Length: 146
Length: 125
Image 1: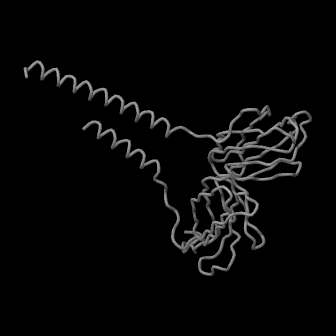
Image 2: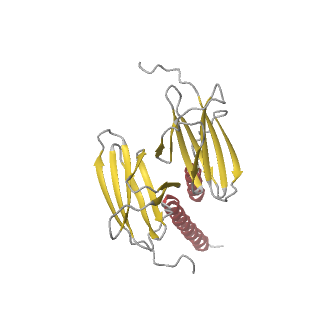
Image 3: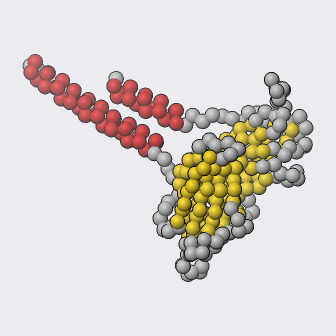
């Protein structure tokens, strides 16, 4: 075998090695992106609720989350169920629902009979914040039984 | 060699992402996994003294960042939840704060009894 043939063989080997390395690099990059991606459970697909978020500093220095489930048309309070970070909480009184919370991220789903659900994703409450959320819920016009 | 290095890096990354802090200290809590009759998913929490495991504590606790106040009666806190991961932090005056990481599966009713140990530290230094 001549030297040039050997060199060619080595070059081909090097090329294959390089390509393989690039593939592995791309795969590891894809893997990193997929693993770092935030998988959110909530989707904002068919909700037309108006969500107004107001952020205040609480006098006590603790964190509070106030949820106001309201009728879209009249702005009056509506009894609702709240799914907050996986926990179902029911508030059937016609007044604000005030929760003490820790600093962190919150995913909220608001649902009620005959209303379209509303979603609030990745709401971050900082230390000493009092967050007030008005959820103006829209009527669900689809029949209860098809 | 470079391929091996990259694969090792990936492996290290995977092992780091799955490395959860194991807060489940022995004998500080007790959990029973039951199938709920209603097929709903529930978390049933109650708090007791570690010395006297029958004596109820009206502890303050948080689940996934939501704070819950103490119950006046000795009944447990039953919360409907979605299947998933939950971090429970229980506190009471004179007791050491306890943190638990739990997984709740669909249709399960997880009964958790948390035993809080005395905190020997003085309230004022």
